[in-house]
Amino acid sequence: MYEHDVIVVGGGGAGLRAAIGAHEAGADVAIVTKLHPVRSHTGAAEGGINAALRDGDDWELHAYDTVKGGDYLTDAPAAETLAQDAPENVVQLENWGMPFSREDDGRMSQRPFGGLSFPRTTYAGAETGHHLLHTLYEQVVKRGITVYDEWYVTRLAVTDEDDPEDRSCHGCVAWDVQTGEIAGFRGRDGVILATGGDGQVFDHTTNAVANTADGVAMAYRAGVPIEDMEFVQFHPTTLPSTGVLISEGTRGEGGILYNSEGERLMFEYGYATNDGELASRDVVSRAELTEINSGRGVDDEYVHLDMRHLGEERIMDRLENILHLAEDFEGVDGLEDPMPVKPGHHYEMGGIETNENGETCIDGLYAIGEAACVSVHGSNRLGGNALPELIVFGGRAGRHAAGADVGEPEIPVGKSGDGIEESDVQYPVDPGSADETSAVVSGDTPDDVIDAAVEAETERIDGLLEKEDGVNHAEVRSKIQKTMTDNVNVFREEDGIREALEVIREAREEYQDVYVADKSRTFNTDLQHTIETRNVIDTAEIIAMGALAREEFRGAHWRKEFQERRDDEWLKHTCVSWNDGNPELWYRPVLLDGENKTYEPKERSY
Image 1 (cartoon, helix red, strand yellow):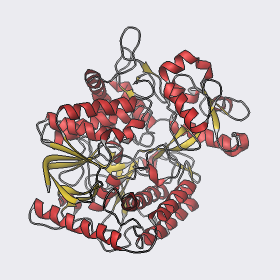
Image 2 (cartoon, rainbow, N blue to C red):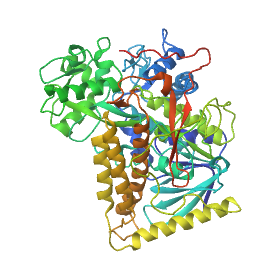
Image 3 (cartoon, rainbow, N blue to C red):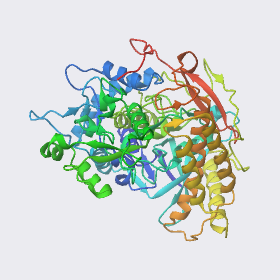
Image 4 (cartoon, rainbow, N blue to C red):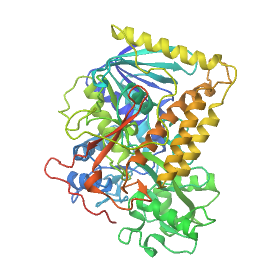
């Protein structure tokens, strides 16, 4: 057994920042990650980091834009914490050596992004995430923080009290990808999940292959509520062939969207007559697909993003890597021709329910980054708000887990408190477990709990390797991705969501017969993908359950039958609890009371 004060699961931006925060607070902290940290998906973030740094801007404007952009499903304490803490955190990154783009007078450059009332997005060319990741990793190396890379955490070590709010997390179980060893990791003061997004639930995504919602699924099965998962962000500018992201910075610098008729679609068809291409991502994604579905798409599949008018000098200074991506993946020279783009899965606004300090309802278990839902993004994340989320809430969780005082949270966690409401939605099939296994274990001491979790996980993995035939995980995962893309995408309707739930149920039952063809113990990607696919199934089901329950049109969640935002009934979060294999959906009210004001819902127009 490996033992530290704080265990951080995941080595992307959020995990690295959490580890630094815990170290700053005096903890012996270790990172356990299935990738080497600098290969993490944070490196794919291109656009920038929002922070109110200039005269004429302030944190209150940033908080307001965030709540408005989230279509008033954002919890105000989370938005205000993000906006208040972001400037200090960005300056900290600068002091650590992050190479931000700069103006002639030496100040960090800032540019417009969709849905912002002030050009507050700092950036490092169009490789902001790459530089952020390397800057944080340098600090981890400098501080001597232990990194267990290529260790895939497959299970949490959580006690088995009936009420999840009485449970404790003492550590986790990980499988060494390099050797096949299965071992327990004890976090004496806490375990922080920073495992990233869920892109592999869909078949066209900007996410890495490694983004399989591992943390969400593990926390869910341990008893933590999963919040607002129906709010999946589809980015309007991804390359059609691969899903590779074309930064919102391209539109921020002045890039223009055209349909096949050569019309500037955002204005010609009234999708966003004020802000045009810089409307929020949900608005632009729906506009593009409406054009394509109306027969005005190029090759019936995509629209054009044109940046030629910006000039070679400006493009090479601020968007050089966009040229390389268009050339490498589409064979298009962005200096000579417009680029093909279409909407693709990009970001999960929901996740593991947490408060502002990253705490879940299980003692000792934290979550941060895209895996978590402190409800800072509401129903639609603004471009440039993901990276400040990583550093702000990552740092807070790390320090809190290490015992530092970071203030009392205002956001509740767990199925208790005022305003809890049960759901009466009827599903076409029974969601949840198709077997009798449990994700929690009993034990008299923390070491006993971890040993029991290691024993259970060893039995599961050995069983997968010993089975000689059955269903390949790729068949199951492909079935999930196809039905989610067909039925729970940008546009949704009841019959399609119900069909998706039925297909997910079929996939869950087929997974009971899954087997691993590669029997080796070293670098066994067949085994790894098989384990990941279970997490993809659980996550897809939570998304579809929330999408069926939410009978309104809010942010990224569009429903054919309900074409209006229904504040009287739906200013509430959807939460799904595993409940020992029998998922239950319930609701918690949105918190719109901030430090100095109440964010009154208004019509969202751009």
